[in-house]
Image (tube, rainbow, N blue to C red; front, side, top):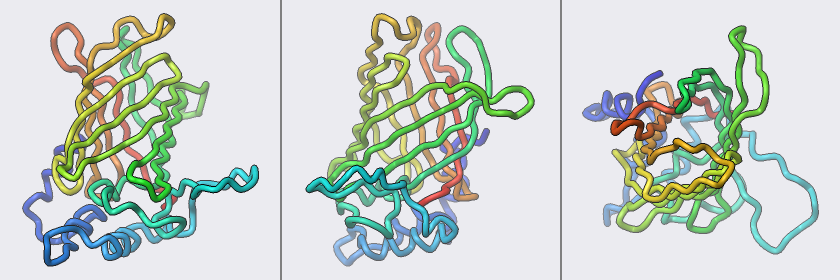
Length: 237
């Protein structure tokens, strides 16, 4: 599994944008701020194959607010305050590895949806399922649901709740134009949740192949150890 931090660093001195994040970062106005329309257009060019796909509509009737969209070409315009997180918006699918605090290791499949509704935050929803030794999908695993926010000073806030009884708050910042690093500031576990879960760090990053890599590390016996990691392909947005 490629570390997104290393993947991001490999092209740090390359002047040729090879991801939507690099292209967006290179698209600035005279005042040094990102130009939203140009950034979206450049991102759209990077993922042509996913251009026509989006989150399926539920069809339960109209409500007087904009629907969530994971496709920058559809729905409301992305809020200007989210341009530093723009490359994350989409539907991502792939596989990863998990090693829980008891030492159990297994492969999992994942679908990650990161969407917006024109307001100054991103919503995200993650579903995972176990994959057996023959590569076949098995039982449903962990689900997460939460939000990303970022301040004008590029200070990231991420909150989520988990189906396993975890509630966490992460703070962080962009590592560079194509990667984001976060550290947990508050980790709460319910009575039926995991008993040994320590504070964590997460890194999300666009890899040279335009896949989204992510790593979650946890404090175990006084040191940070890999807990979960994944490599996902954009399938919509």
